[in-house]
Picture (spheres, helix red, strand yellow):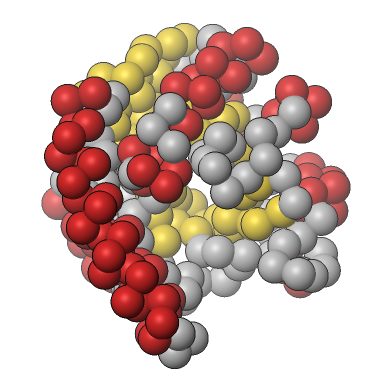
Length: 259
């Protein structure tokens, strides 16, 4: 079972990917399952392709909290309809408690990006898994060692490790994924500790990050930000090429259930 755990749609303010195109691309690159999510909402638009595809498609939300981004898969009631969004984030306790009450699956997404304060072990112990490889973490602004720190945390806390492309564009889908050996059993997300899992990853190109920020700037009409983005792009491209041979890629790790 080959799953990319982190794909955005046009419902996110920095993506233009349509659900039908996401499904088509996921099938093309040989994925068996995908987690479709958006920033602070799990209410992305369904389409006829969902009924026709053989892919396992999980509906999720990526919620900005005071302690970082938390992915919630399979909540029956969208958490944005329960928790209060204030000053650009939700309360961590509200997201976690309501996700658990609905028996949802909880992932700590890219926990060591520079935009987040490092999560405590007490917080990480409350989630079901940690995203230990995120294809956007390889960019300069997200810290080159963010993925490595997440791997170390998962090992330290004996938590399952997952990965995702963090795709905001169709071309990025499948850049990171987890291959589960289910030993012939039907795949059960809540039972991943039973499986052997192999994490694959490769970095997204900096152009994708630039396009995301450009879309966001265009939607909010912040033209000054566009000029800064152009300068930043050239710097990111230079550093990306310079450090490319030092970035983790390919098979990242293999483990059985919890580490």
